[in-house]
Length: 371
Image 1 (cartoon, helix red, strand yellow):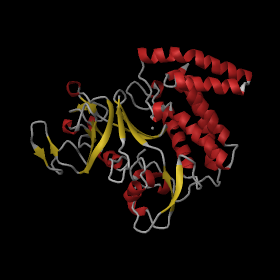
Image 2 (cartoon, rainbow, N blue to C red):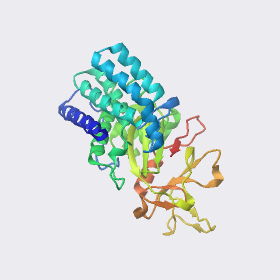
Image 3 (cartoon, rainbow, N blue to C red):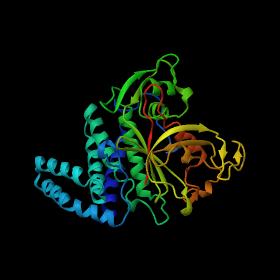
Image 4 (spheres, rainbow, N blue to C red):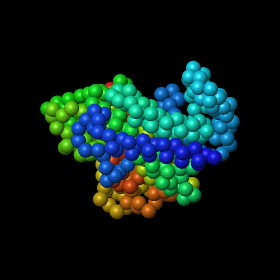
């Protein structure tokens, strides 16, 4: 059964978390406290170096599973025979030919849990590499349909999966020497601020990517000159899953966190596709469809506390699509907007500092994928 595989994987992961919680080693945080539940805080593939969300249930998913079935059977035979070379070859084929299939995601979930457990017996850089691999595999399962209830609320099993991934994230992202291609050490210079570090180092995410794992806080004033931190090197992308009303942050192919959102009404649907962030603004004014302009403090302002404009060739700047806050949190989880993606105000403000637009220093703009 699909759910059985997921639950078994989570049991293994939770067992690993118990081990990690009791261990105090060189792989623990570089500096500062760990992030807590008070800081808002979810898997995707990487075709062409870009993650992709799990397909929605239906004919496409069934066809993907049919394509994955013989490849998974080959994997099972190789595992049973203990044939490492055959196992490696079968996994490579699965990744190349059917990695997005729900069945492949369930296999990745199981393999990720096993890899996380294996990491508990390792030390130093080998343990960090195993945990890095585990979190990427586990991240592929966070949008599987069995992890959401009939009301689309995440199940307790999904909450445990997310907690396991976030624990792995902290361990990998705080490994002091850094992990090649993932993090590198950096000493904060006098006059440095998170936004300046992001721009000067051409990081693939906004200032929250510097603060979140290093300091366990999103307060930019907590960064002090002389502090040894780790710079994240992979690209942050934003994924919006309209069917489940979720907006997720991924770095490379591993999950960071997700938020509940509202999307466009049936008569003004949120467009699908790949977008790029071009503008950001806190406490923005809003021009309504009828042309009336609402000031930031006006109760009728639909943009809430933050506005992030997204564009592509089909929907250019003038189209006016974006991600923003709302003064109507009761509309989250509903098709309730004029076409934009809306978040609770605190989460919109947080997202504002996770994403970035392209700057004059050549730093990349954040990509947003809406499905």
